[in-house]
Image (cartoon, rainbow, N blue to C red; front, side, top):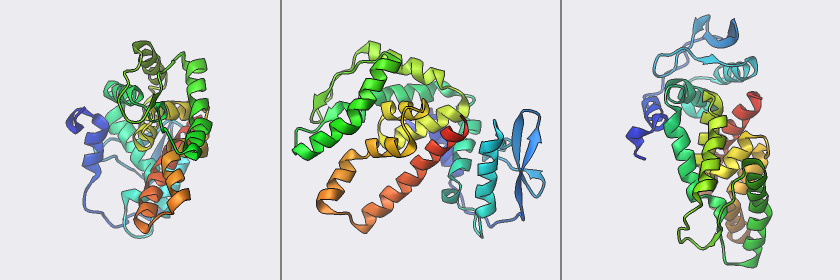
Amino acid sequence: MSESDNPMRRAQAAMRAVLPKRFYKEARVGVAGDTFDILLDGRPAKTPARNALTLPNEKLAAAIAAEWNAIEDTIDPALLPLTRLANLAIDAVASAPQPVIDEIVQYAGSDLVLYRAEGPEGLVVLQNERWNPVLAWAAASLGARFSLAEGIVHVRQPDEALACVREAAGRLARPFVLTAVASATNIGGSALIALALGEDALSGDEAWNAAHVDEQWNISQWGEDAEMQQRLAARHAEFSAAAKMLSLLR
């Protein structure tokens, strides 16, 4: 799927702009019936597409207001991870969930947990420890049974298994939930881990560790350089935001 076809990608591109200075004194939550708005000095905050930044529950709204209050000088999107996910949910996923579901199913077709190392033994053991429970959960909870492979040669997955993934993603197709699951899928490279996270079968830390077995193994053997640390830290912040959003929506 090209970036132009994916509503989340289009919305993310729209967020890349010159960073403005903080222009408000206070962010707070405004209650409007069953929904909750973010108010900046009493005025409703807007998404990049100029929609109201309206949240489905007070817990998520309070967490997003806290992000805005923590801004000191420049409004850097990197410091507003929950806000960014909310913007994507409102501007992109709410009106076009199907391409997002399609992408999750695509990931499942070549899911991280399906491709196992032939060695060394320590890595094989670690993959089994962290990935086999995910596959067991997928079989028991989704009815999805997948084919495993060693190495990187693509193995076509059963249509029935992918249909189960599509059904599971459809059950999570509320805009904010689906956005968080899709984000975790993209970052971790695993639809199955992200769906387990979305269904509360894995904690945020468990999901992160399952999605980064290879990286953590390599670090344990050879250490990590500053560039790798920075890259993993940025990914971890994004993944944690997705996990936090899912937790706040429960």
